[in-house]
Length: 612
Image 1 (cartoon, rainbow, N blue to C red):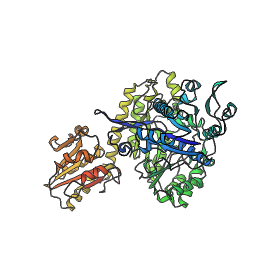
Image 2 (cartoon, rainbow, N blue to C red):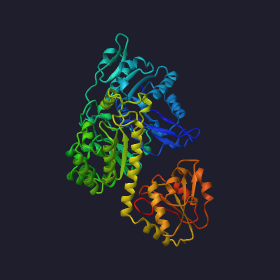
Image 3 (tube, rainbow, N blue to C red):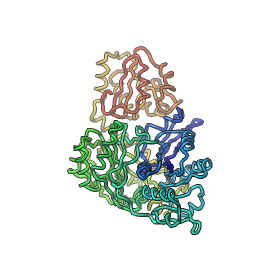
Image 4 (cartoon, rainbow, N blue to C red):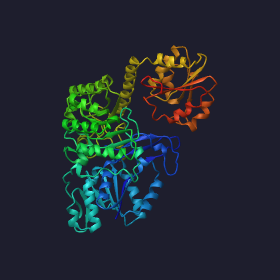
């Protein structure tokens, strides 16, 4: 029996001057979208859909590996990570000719995914369609009744239930056998739609390592926590979290409990080593719900990583700052931990209590400081629009984010995802602004209001928080790095004349670029800037408009679209300087092509004050 596991494509290309977008679904804690302005196709792939954050589809890939282990002819295809077109996707599905197709969906993509499933079913009417994923209606019998295109649903954590379902389909379907499979919905001629109870969660060491071949492009998966290099291996060492955050999706919808499950350190290390033998990964990311739930397990895994010689590879994870301590940090530093994500959410204790996060803000602050003091980079998350939030509590949270020793942040609007207790609370309070599932695509657009804020006000505070954090971060860096002196000395060491034109490419954090321009101007250099028009207002604060050359035919640096206009700015004595928002220039390939147009050797200057 041929089984196809699908994370189907989900994107919209730019058209008529409007930005497009790409979405992520499987492997992400909630579906969300990113802007796209490149629609160029090459051999069925859209490169503009790739290059940024891409989560690994853990459940699909593990289910695919389990199916192969049980003797099925199985294939896992992650169309989102492949960046493939819809046409290319359909061509593959038609050629594979599966007997059963397992599709992971989500609230925001449900309507879209059902339309694709309909098209597949029209071409392959005998193919059995199984839906899984993050959407509350998958647990509703009436949903299956009114959606004939779906044959079966497996809800919650689905690897084990899907395997039992596949075995029953292969060996002979009966109501009795189907009713013995936990966590599924099926149609019975006698009983109509039947929903079985969710079963016991399986032990993680009983599952095979996730499939990483087939249609799973290993080089494309990436979560660049504070500058992790790529290619990157993503895996899990635990699942679950006993804490009861009202907004957290996986524990409520996938695990159906606060149960916390661990793999053995040997199994985790074995998976990392086995994959490193196939692909020279430059980092790995352990995408646990709460990595440091068990102190003993953290220390044991860190020791196993160190003993296996894997501590030379930078890696990251996600944990709770209130549970970190010196003993864990000692072990993690030895194990090569590069960065960690901590959820803070709010600076106000009463807001944290109302969200049932069960966390002490003072312990959080202490844990963050201890982590940063060890040289581990820190990414923090904050959420606006939680129950009880006021202007004062949000202002306090923004101030705390600016003060804490962190490298990167994420500010989000509280999104009451369907299926969480937060959704029920906000619905009961009358705060939901939309129950159109397609609107639930992340956390920069408000789908709800609160007792103190409209959705528009929450969206404003997200932008304001990022603006203030960026300014505070740059001020901290500027106070430590003698940018002007370093850059001036670099130019002089190259015997660049003060009569030469310096063209700065606005390809970094705007506050960083503005600071460099001020430093260069104060040293007597003749500075010009090449920038997208959206930065014009900022740049006019530090220089004369006649020295600013703008483009608007593309949002980001694109050599093919910009090289002609840029060449018109060049002379034989032009020096090009490219500020860089990271420390190693990763992701600046198009900028490097532009830099190569100059007659003099150009300079890429990193945000940590070094020439790359």
